[in-house]
Amino acid sequence: MHSRRHERLVVEYEVRCFLQDSEARLVIYDICVDGCCIDTEGFRVAMDEVIHFRFFDDLAVEGSVVWKNDRFAGVHFSQELHPALVLHLGFKPIAASLGEFLPRDRFGRELPPIGWMTIPR
Image 1: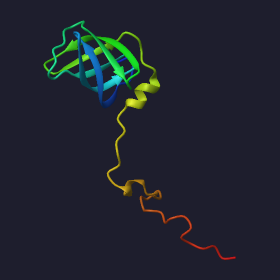
Image 2 (image 1 turned 30 degrees about the vertical axis):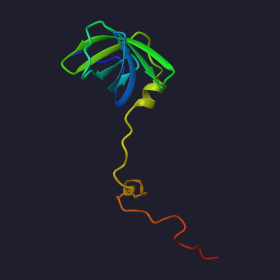
Image 3 (image 1 turned 90 degrees about the horizontal axis):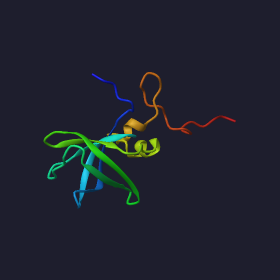
Image 4 (image 1 turned 60 degrees about the horizontal axis):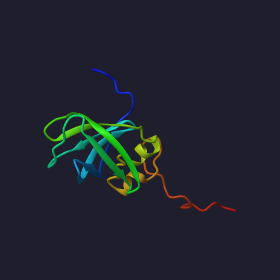
């Protein structure tokens, strides 16, 4: 098994794509600076086919299909994306509850709010 040159980030990002003279909205499921994995459900893509991506309506990137199966395809970008864009698109989990944000001591106990105690003068 080969190691990847760049770290892939999990995403779920719908992007405008132009392929075979048609426009489509495809979902990217993972991305790195030099490629991504797209869900091609409902669209036929061929090996080596060039796909033009439009991120945020003004950033155009092109890539070619390097692998595919029944539903997904791997795309290699012709030019590397800026790492900040990849991080921006990366999956950011939402905390299940506000309780996960409460400050805790080293034993996991919730800390009292700041100012709950008055300091004697």
